[in-house]
Image (cartoon, rainbow, N blue to C red):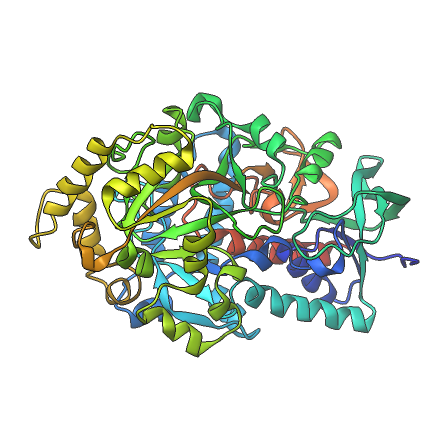
Length: 552
């Protein structure tokens, strides 16, 4: 394949790359869109996502009686991010700009391209530590009807229209090794052409080199993703002083091609890479019984009712409840050296409160199947969740507590779980459900969540004894640490121009999406409010594309 010269090179055909390429081509410029994977992986990580987007004061929220505002969202963001470094200058600026976008034209811009939203709004990162603590004060997690593919679809469509018109060329299986500089300006990229691969989307593809390339353009946009699929790089950047040692065993939430190599290549060319120690890994990871990529893990999106236990069976202390504070709970787990934790629940809880992250785990939303979606309110456990109960290596299902604890120890291969400890924790919790009030903080937060109609109907069970036989069987789920997002990245200004250490602009180089920390080199700070990763790709990709279109 002979590639024609183009005005702009975009490296990475995930969501941010598609948005950036579409925006550049909309302005009449030509684009080379490179990716080390094949065309079957177009859309990158976004394809695999649940499709959740952070929106502020949306019609969906208002219909549910949720009162949100730009002011409240800004307060939540800053309290959650915890910006505390000199290099957080641009991340702060990006956060302010993104919040204005999320409270402003984000929804209308997406709706104008055909994106629709599920009517229920999810409450991720519930916080629970007071008004000045981290977390969302109200539900803001808006799920795209069509999940991850549903958010990729309009931008892929725009890009393919430009391909047909000759303004965009795809260059798949082109792995960029480095940036080309001339007189201090980035003038293009060079790297390897990889052999064609028939590997399915998400599977590890061949790395056999069959050629080389050296391409030039007026500007280059990096949209190559983060490091979550590269366990070695995750461990290298792990903040031991904050979180303690990295767990010996972690599962992987993204495909192997999310390898972080372009961050390193850009840094080697003189770019400023900031906040590499800030990452967003999940504490509720389960091994996929039907894996696609190496070490494939799935994140459980939990409601707030499950008991969370340490390896011996003791309940995790306040505020470490399911779905409240991911980083705080990760810190508690890793600082204590726990190799895993346990959720203890029953069928009634798992039926309503267990969602699995990922487009492939939510076929009703992904396929826009209203009938299948309505079955979530039926009597049966969702099919994908039931499949994990039946086949998952991290699930123990038993009819009584002694057998459940015995099964937990059999799964681990030791006697770490103490039956007397587990029984005490469960019974102390259960007796607190006999009244509408009580002193159990987790149950108080559950009752508070149920004050919202959407939470009561679709997400949070009525407080009831876990040991109630009518709600059985009992279930224990071994929760592993799951690698996922890179919060730090290439430092960029508000035009998405990559900066060198010290703050000087690197002419000709732009970055968007996860490689840039979703904007500025770390728009989230230390923590995320969720729905902000896809949103960060959309926002930063749009800015990068429009900025480049004005330059070249």
